[in-house]
Picture (cartoon, rainbow, N blue to C red):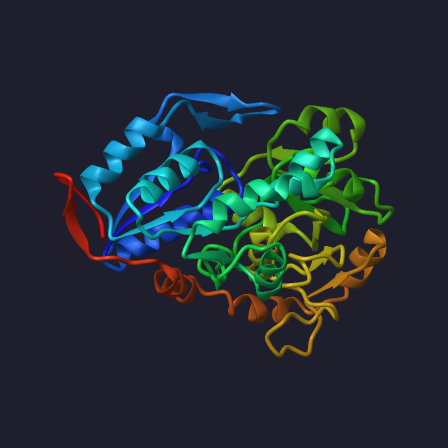
Length: 355
């Protein structure tokens, strides 16, 4: 199948959305599909306000149309609500063609944090973007229910996965984390206001706090928390080694739709401490035993993040790995293909397009 995957989020950005989409494209190709990725790398870009490392395509419509016409996809999936997503959406709508979208980021919540305006003001834009899709992909059942309640439907469940070969307790610990006072408390992700990292760095549990990631708040947090080890962005084996060195993974975000880093931590045998909010609830579970029939603790959720860390430290590390095994990329890729709005290809006005 010829699949066009359109995303404003792509390398060199470092986050769970980019890793999930890049892995999906890789797995689709390995399964025999022909995948065209339309990303900012193919366009002139400008930095996103307050996020200069996020590149936004400048007036991408003409080139997006040309790329899609030449590729003649049998399915079009729009992963983000940025300039590329809107341009590809327009291409599909003008031809009366089906497409799918996915909801990865609580964009209204993020904008609200930066502007002080109510998040509800921004949901109409989300409804307009996703409302034209044949279905919107959601990574959890709870998110699917929330989107339906917001007027975005139908929703297709697309669970994300983890590379169990890369993220494992057998990896050697990261050299910078060896010999640190324990417990070693690790957080991985964008260093930005919406990740709520200060809540983690203000916790009272002894030991060592380690932050992996880059972002606009990094220099400020370094200055405010000189006792914290900031390792910057890590990738591949280096990232896996950071997880392997930790005693507990701390996820202070209240706005993520899933939090792929939580599953990467579990795969590394590291329990998760977080707030009892969507994302962690959909992975760790309200009682800390996961959502797949496990009986041993794999983490802890509590409005008191210090208490969540202390309880999570009592978790069964072997059970963490067992729980993570339920997040298999092969199953995720199959769910992605199953949700696509596929159409046969025909010639329209002298150009190939979806019929």
